Length: 596
Image (tube, rainbow, N blue to C red; front, side):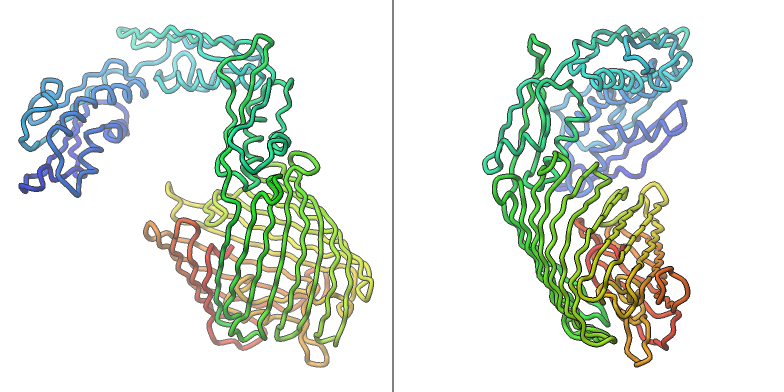
């Protein structure tokens, strides 16, 4: 089998207009795909491919060709070919016979010819000792295809299995690997040296300047005397990184254990700059523009704690009422109750001027957030909220105490631009209203799923289900902020903002006690940075808390995404599809990040 590549045409001596060099691959035998693997390994191939915009000296090609013998041989060994023949000719001369420094004549052709030879299998495949219950990886067994990659995998997994139960200095103690060419067989015997079971020794901390060492030690939670556990060390590093106070975190074990079977550990950190400012903007046809900004102070008091103040103005120039304002502040202190549980304290004031209601609201809250893993976290707390509302029921005041409980499970591969996985956010707020609402429960859930297709996942199907219900107070006794509307960029695109509601006998509009929203998108990547999206959204509002009956509406549209590296810029154009009102216009939405 002969393969002639068309990808490698580079000007060798651009100043003199020299002809391009051509690379030819000749592979005699071997598995399907082996040629592609070898070409991807070849330094000559990479050198010529990367030289498309400039001159390439002859010496570079010769040096790459001479290095390719070892590279190609290693790649063949990886695949189980232990008796190959490799020839690399530069203009008809074997590369090993050429001087790197010499002629400046341009190279016309490079020919790489490979005869892989027979495929070898394992005769004996042994690795010992292994911890109880641990077996070698699949493929490291008699009769299986031999190769250096599976040998490395077996060694690595064996060492890691010992480290996982405290043998921090486990290593490969010896190996006997013999290739029997007549029988096309490889006999491999790997010997592991587990070493003693170790405990953590002294925990040293380096690199911190403003964050207190005592707090770093508390967050890391590596106790001297505990048995060495590599997973615990990884969790410690993640907890420290998650505080946001550090640009980098590494936990390094000492090169050698001490005579008392303890292993000193060093936590090395590099702190971030303490302050950060951010801005955001969105625009919608009906909702108008929205501007937001925040100011963040990391490590406020030396405990890797943070203080964040933020402000937001929405509905600027919109058709859904006047401007809405919000100011908020949040203080977070990590590892307050235990290494995985953070304390947060916050306050918020908000003024809303919507078409169907207006409200002024103030809230203070305190709680704890337990971060169980990178994927799962939950929080609980206490909240006290006062609001002054004018809506279809007249002027009302509310004073409500609640116990918000929230859980998030995030399996998305990228929160800003997911192509695979799912996300669940569920919240339940038992509350008591001292003025009018009385006791009740507010429930909200947001479920999102993503499925990518193709090797690069250039096509993505995305779906979202939103659920909300208010149980307890009658409609006229419910806080307006706890009632549900539908329409707009966060629910049903193509329908005007909060256009779906309940109509009172007086003709005024109020929100419903339950909401169901469904959205589906197909996202197609067109170029490296540009993608297109087609979507359909549907929402339903009901007077009851059981999601039964009520009115519904739908919208659909097309969008464009431009990937900025920190999240896509989103532009969506949507039209109404169905609903109780005769809406014949269109809605435009611009923002950063996917719609969901």
